[in-house]
Image (cartoon, rainbow, N blue to C red; front, side, top):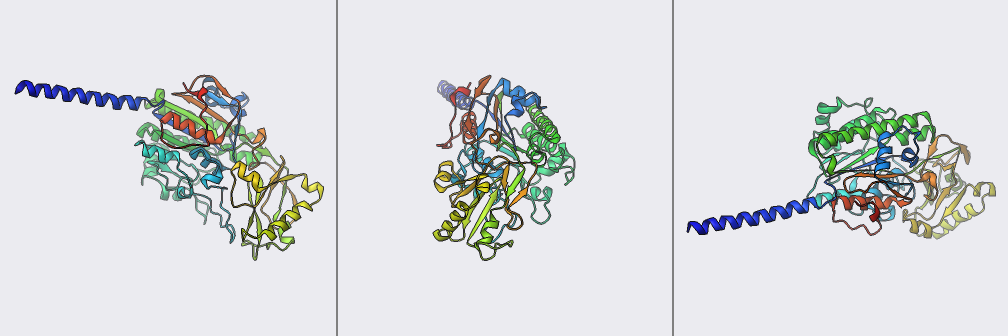
Length: 453
């Protein structure tokens, strides 16, 4: 009897060891245990391809890992649609985040696409949770209520523009902000976390670094904004743009150090990407003035008794109809555009519905106006048609180099010194899927096998 019991215990231990070994082997089969996905708003490839930019971390990762010479974005090439493409692998027509702010028929209230429930396809965050892994996110667009374990979403008050308390209200888990304030940040307020100053990048890097080191999430998504902010105000080569790149690089360095302190650097992959490039502007066009003059809308905040309106998003403008079946009004707008003086018509092109479908833009728009470089569209419905503009902007049709964004992948599971001449923003999701071995369908996203280690 004793002999049978001993054999039974031995067999049990054997099968337990086999099962444990299988689980361990399965866990180790992923190319990476941790992925840090960092989006630099307004990220341009020259930030890591040209040594004049103060970005030693970015430049060394680009040289040592995989890098792209240019990443083709979505239309319009603005922040919220682009970030949702990164996190889903789909263009706006499929994921449902068409602009930064939704077109509101009764007039724009100032709200943006904040809530993840508005995304119409699964996200990488969903896939991570379904795989039994954990995630963290810091200031990522459209992340309110997302299935994220440690989440500080991008969100602000429509009443006063404040961000700290609204983010605290939407955080997951409750008390995460207070914990980070105690452990690493110090008390947060509108001065110590402010996009007008580079301290915001420091705080964001410290948040992500603390959570990565303390809780070791499998996927961390981070949104850094300073390069976008200062390119808007100063253009592509402004003095604060250089300083912003240094601050962003420093924030990335903080996160890298956190991974090193946590002892997970050899199992971690850093992906650095963005949402769009930037174009210097000198003039803007206000197409809604044409509609006011034609009696198709009124010069008022709620558009009055309107039939057609242009919704501007970055540099471009998208035509919406109050009645989507109102072909008479659509034809009137097309005639207005066709009858414009040649001096104005040469400043933009009309993107018809067929082309909007091909690029995956808002299915509700009748057409769009895509300006040439240097020109942007304004939502104004009064004043001069053509007005002066300054600084830089984005939102252009993504068919030229300056509006492209960048991509770097470095670390576990990534081959060394690989150059990708051209890729799409939709392709970033496939890299994350490969690294974490996620079960998510990405039919419009390519994984280039040449980057796999």
